[in-house]
Length: 340
Image: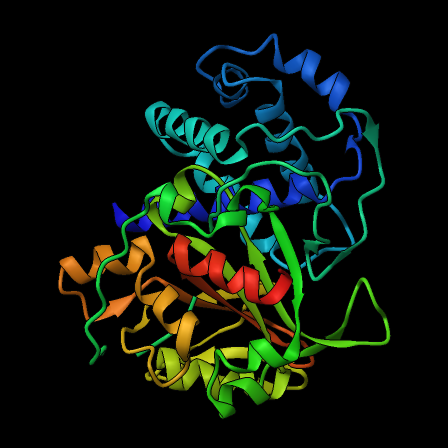
């Protein structure tokens, strides 16, 4: 059951992110919407349309993205999750529609059709400029916690004063404040990218995603950290106990018995050990340990956590992506340190 919940949360995150990347509505949506409105109420189209046209459009845009020939990071996972959803019961599909609508909140994306998408990097769009009150959501890492963490109380009055101006997605973290969140080995393994706002400045490949609804409530706000290609195999083994090998430029996972798994575009590693104190420091360590998913696992006395995951590509030349779920209050504090 928890696995299904996690998979559904992953799908919601990917659908919302794909929809928000669009500069305009998905091409062909008008005609497809007319057809969808004739669908049976018990079909996935009928279920989604009951939650509003915007919810259906988000689903349609992401589903259409799975058909793109040029491919993108996360395409294979998105396709697999859609296929899984189609096999689920009507009740599960209704729950998905409800949670997708909640995650989208009051988002207002353009509904005009277009083939164009906004300027994005690694599947994450630039920081939104429209003002609005949004609340955080979102995905990462490993290790047996030896420190006592006081559970976080998610009350609005405890959020920093400027929480009302939170945006959805922030891309790139300034190097000086970001360095304080990691130990040296991990810090040196983080990719550096040029700032989207100032091309002369290098920033850490760190994104923060603040969604609404189901994902934030059950998992937390999200930080995604780009890892250099040469560190992917080392981190997969150290944090997830998975042996990754490379042959002829192709990366694959080796099973103890000798069998191998070759990722279809990419694969996500989950369930790292709970002690995160050797990886993260300060606010990020506290944020990871106070995420809803981490706290829920703590109550169940689980020895591993889904609060940290790692996505790796089948191409050895490409880096990895570590996702960390965070408690809302600490996530907003980190956001303030990075972006003001």
